[in-house]
Length: 415
Image 1: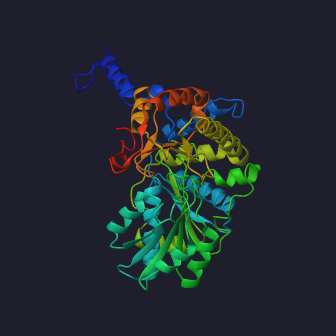
Image 2: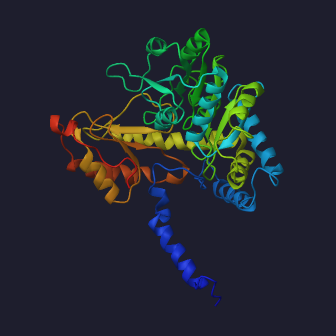
Image 3: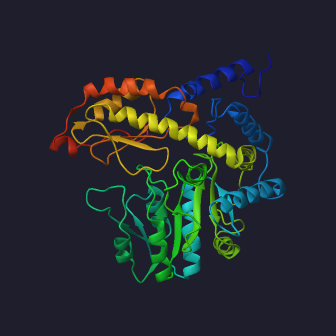
């Protein structure tokens, strides 16, 4: 048996990989109700799931040694094809942009572009309080004031456009809205916010990390023809982020930032040369994996994936609503459900579910804890067992009182 320069044999190395896979809980993937990556599996709705996933991972492997500089010709073609296709589905006539490491980087690059166009060294950015934590991070990093607009009283998933407009200051450079909010799954009133942005001459970025790769397909499949217009069909929208490693099913890290036109991409490249991205050297593996998913699935495939995910979400929601004391927070337009209670402290319930092997995200709003689940194709057949364990674990919940409302919640991501 070969012994490598470090002293490890191949068998010892493979045993260590096996151990680390178990620690990472990869064998428990069907019980992971909040994850990112290539989630396709064969189901009646996606009978080609396993094969497509394997081909995307193989594309990732074949390009894993590359970068976007000298050996990046193929990757740049792939990137342009993904952006052009998806940008067209999102309503842009001449979409441009690039792939990123995920929604955080996409949001950062969008606001750096807005800052470049404004000519300001500082300034402020306005966004609803349902915005992703990366928005606060980028404001701190880029010397911008975060002007956070509270939700209407008692309607956490909603946004008041008038309040957004009232928050604009003379130094405001951009507004950010969300299509697929964390953790409500709602879509901000982007058409109204777009009008506000145009009136004030402001850059409008849409964070579609969760919603970007499912909303277009839910609309086109006929699942939900009432989805409000949220994309480049709104004239005021300048850029949209959308994560391929979420509902795009691609191996992470794979996000995207799409601009309405070439002039906006040129501004991004001025402040972040040469690509417009935060990183200079970019690995090609994620680009190849994302391209493979887009090429192999196309619109019809993504519609099937979206319908499969929503079928599980609807099964989950219906089951939760039959359990006394539990509610599904209103407003979700995508495969995201926020389970909470107005009468029970669900912290013991959440901890028991995690003890039983279920993986999900948690948040402290509504207090003291809500459980966030995002069903995807790899969860097929797991909704009914989860509901059974949830109903059992609710028996551990305590009555909600003032003390529990002010107490700390559970770990957001379970680690």
